[in-house]
Length: 465
Image (cartoon, rainbow, N blue to C red; front, side):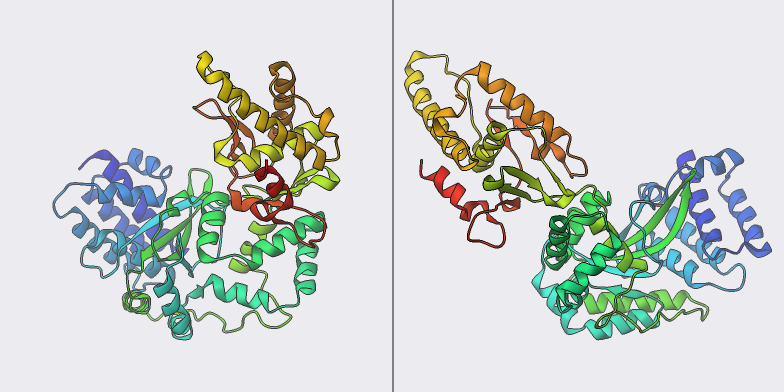
């Protein structure tokens, strides 16, 4: 057995002993036997403090020692009942260990450990997650929601299905919900509140997983997750930092069957210690503000790691980022028109480099004339005169405009992947902005709400040249 495996075993047994927040003589006697059996010395125990539970399980999974995992699981079961009682928290950790290490276990999954400051919910919360919409699974959850919720509830778990929460929010008076959001974040502007409200109403399970769990909360391992149940199994310290541990169980083709298998296996480990979750919940005019519900609103209201939309408002000469309650500052009409031009150009961008051969010079000049006409038209929409628009074909004029624009966009705080919102030079030499097209909107007269860029008058003007 490698030393790193001894460290991993020490970490897991330590978490198992602490799971119920009680340490007794029976557990200490079992701990001494474990240390002797696996030759775990004080140095290994000190090293175990500095690795997360997920890493310890990963190390044991890759260990190529015959019978190690089977023997280890048998010792874990002995440890769990060494005080004569397997508590709810101990059974939850045991279920996670069995899911990852026990080949005979009927479920497949993985454990994740993340810093608790980034995302924290109550132990025993069960989230349905997916990276993209799976119609069959969602239909099964909708049809069996009550039985799934009750089955988990009676085993001491709280099932969270994002569409159910959003459905409750969507049936609430928008003014009331906006009042609640404003109460929770009084410094937020009306435009930012409108953006948060719209984002909340449009949230899907896939969007929650990608935009909030992955992008905002740092759970990047979930980017390619299949339909799964994400279960909070406990909190632990890694060095001086507190972590939250989650079990992610693959649902497969039968969500109801997966839930029942998990509940049956979990309850089979218990010693009658089932804590029933309250049946009360959100209802008309009333909202939970604790546990997952508080966390959901918190991560919407905290202005960091956000995939913000971009609002182009030519008539007010503004480039807005409602998701972070900010706008481009320190720039003039020429920079704003250039940014709008690049957003219209999309991934194609603009290549200002002159060709090396004289044969290609003619087509280059025609292309640059077209770019200049487009820029002048957008410049006019921002309140300028076409004839006064800077000539982008001249490097001594173009470069200061690019520098000023980039400097302003670098000052934006709170964006996820901020480089996507700035001007970048691609490998082929063209300049572009890599914001997804569906995040760009234009404020225009005759429309109460910003319209998607491709449906806007600005885009039609650009496209018509």
